[in-house]
Length: 207
Image (cartoon, rainbow, N blue to C red; front, side, top):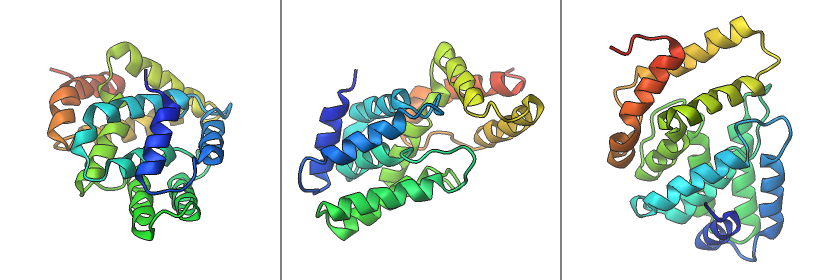
């Protein structure tokens, strides 16, 4: 299991930030532990960081990708549509305040913004980050089913009929992509299972 504190220290120092970053680390964990979260929790963070540790050599700027993973769901309010922007701004501000170089802080901010999933990732670091964030789609069936339940709990205030319709639209958008996972590593490991999971979740014919 991923040691969160070790991951944080490695990422923080690797990004050129001064000090131990303990205040930021604790603030982030407090965010991931917020009671309204059911999927975007410390569990999701640990899964992402664990996946990253297996592919760290793929990244051009591994520390920046790891920092971006820490911040990518730092702000999470299902009733707002600017979570990624606010998370990205927090990441940049925290790094700059700790003495990291401006270009590093800007790259981390840009990485966090890619988790809006508004467009396919372009740079290698973006591809690694997004594949990690989407890895849950290719999880074994029990974990994928748990993930679906967790997402529904986060949107428990939404009527079932509306949630089902909107959720199906989101999942189908991933199915329509030529490749869900961009990097060869994640594509080979998770693409097929992700498509089976998504077909089951949306009621599509898997034949």
